[in-house]
Length: 477
Image (cartoon, rainbow, N blue to C red; front, side, top):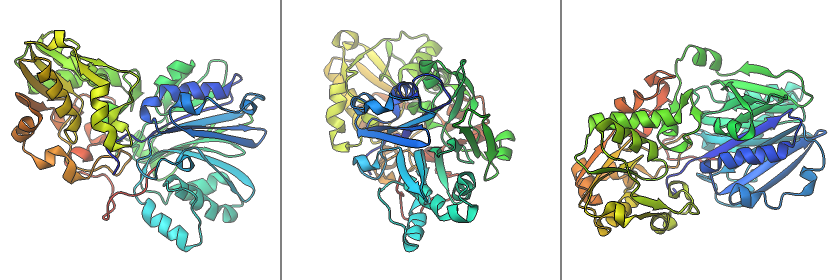
C-alpha cells in the first residue's frame, strides 16, 4: 500500500452552449483535493472523441491542452482527477480511458474501487482479454466489449450487463457516440451529483462545489443504482436502474455511503449525501466536546480539514479558538500523497507552529483523524518545541482499525496505530497530555439526510457491507 489516500473526482458537462472544455477544467480544479497525481479531459464533437491527460495537478495537466479542444463546439466533455490507490503513477493509468469497441469509441472515468476486480480480471484474461493498464476501471470496458455483439451493439444494454457483474464502490462517467452516462453503484458508496445550467445543459460532479464554481444549479443526487443518460443531440435525459438501486435508494434501505467523505475528504462548501459538509463537521466538533471536553486555554485546528470540527468544539465549550499552525498552501495534502516516504518531510513543510500563539498555553488540537500517527506525532512535537505548556488532542472520528476495500487507500490494519496500542499508549506515543476520539454513534448522529445505518463505517468497526477479498486489496482506479 502506498499510504492512506483518497480515490478520485469526476466532472462532466453535456449540452452546454458555451466552452465545455474550460467548464470541465474549472470543475476539476474545484475537485483537486480528491486527487493530485494526474488529471485528464475527454471531449466529444461530431461523434469523434479527443483525449488529453497528464500527470500532475489540473493546472499542470491542462497547461498544454491542444488548441483543437477549443476549435469547435463540443457536445459533451468529461474529466477526472486521480489519486491512484493502486496501479502505479504512469500516465497510462490516468483517466479517462479511451478505447475502441467494434469501431465505437468509448471513454470511461471512475471514482471508487471494484472489490471483485481481481477475479474478474483473471476471468477475462483466461478468455483472451489483453489489459493495457493496471487499473480496475479497465475491467468494465472488457465486460462491455464481451456483451456488445449479443446486445446488437447497444451500449446501454452492454453497460447494464457489465454493471451487474461488479461489486464494491464505484461512480462512473462513460462517454459513447450517443451521449454521456453517469452511474452510481447500488449501495451508493461514493457521491455523484446532477446539476443544470440556467441557459441549458447538464453537469455531473463528485461534489456540489463544482456546480457553484461553474454556475450550475444543483438538481439532485445521482441515485444509488441509477444510470443517468444525457444524449449528445440535446434530447431529454433518460434515467434507469440496475441492481435494485431504485428500491434501495427510495426506501433508504441497504445503502453504504462513506462517512469519511464528511469526516475528511469532501470540501466544506459541498453537500454530500444530502448533508452540508460544513454543518456536519461543526456538529462533529460539538459532539466531540460533549463526549471528551478538554481543560485548555485555546482550541486549535489542524488546517484545513480539522478546521470546522475545531470551531464546533470551541463553541460548545466556550473556549477561545485560535490558529496555532500556519499552513504552506503550496504543499499538497499529505494524507493523499502517493509517495509515503515523502510524508514525514512534507508534514513539517506544510504546517508550522506559530510561537506567539503557542508559547505557555494549554492547547487542544482538533484533528480529523489519526491513522498511523506519523503526522500527528510530528505536529505535537513541533508544538512542544514552540513552547506549549500542554498539548491535548481530540479526534472528530473513531479510531481506525480496519482496511477499506471501497476506494480509500488505508494502510494494512497492522500499521494502524489504534491496532498497535491502547488509547493511553497512543497518547504516550504521540506525546499528548490527553486524547479523545468521537464515538461511532456520536459521529453518525451528525449526519441527518439519511439514517445512521445508511453509512459505511467499516474502517472503524469492521462491519463491511459487502463481501471483501480474502487475499487482500484488489486493483483500484
